[in-house]
Image (tube, rainbow, N blue to C red; front, side, top):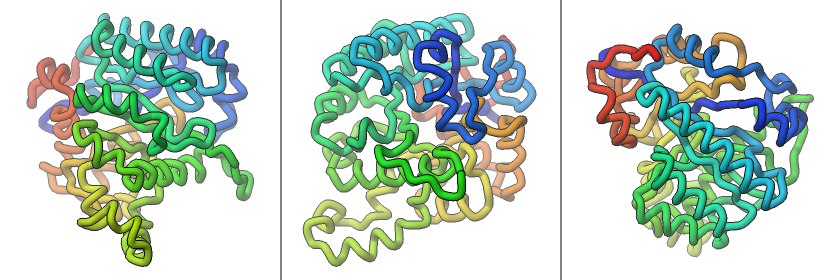
Length: 327
């Protein structure tokens, strides 16, 4: 590694957030069924062990989506202030994606603006759906207008679909999360959101879910529907190409080969999904990427070079040859 390693898929679980949302809604979506242990000191220690220079934090599913509009606004504000203090205290170790209370779009816009203008946020975090409304729906467009004006980075994290399907006793995060990311991608592209707001930089979790495998099928079958085909005049692969994808829980040979066949290496980012995963997942992600046999320059780009193009604040703090900063 010749540059910094930047984790764009890294969650925080402060006690007040867990107590307010409740361990049930948080733990039920994870693979263990429990809320994983989290502490700031523990996260930093594991980052150091894995050689991770910087983590851009987010609040994972269900975020604040299960609360009332007033409760969601208050908790989102609290979480964003908490994350901002982490960045203020260790500006090269942490970044932040602003948590948005999407129950009321005007409130979400106001919190996004506060995140950028007052807290210095690196982007915003959205869930793949909100009560079954996927991100391409018109209700969200006023927010996208503001984000497009700012050329914002939007990190999209999956959540359970409105109609959860249980198969074999597997958790929502095992199958439904990647499927919901797949639905979110389709919604963004075929609704025209990615076309109409071209300055937004979208990061999709878990290597795009199932979409790398299904992209060819989507390409073929949309040829049967002229109305859909008009929305992707240059084809589905070209519509996917500008999107970014993290490798959290997805750094395996089959998934990675499909993703790299669909999008250029410049669109792939390092991510771990900490702390929602097995023990050692930070170091394990680093090791799994190394075992893929990627060219050194490609691995460096995925580790951090591609992220530096997205996050100018971090680019100013982390030189290309930066060593891991200890905070």
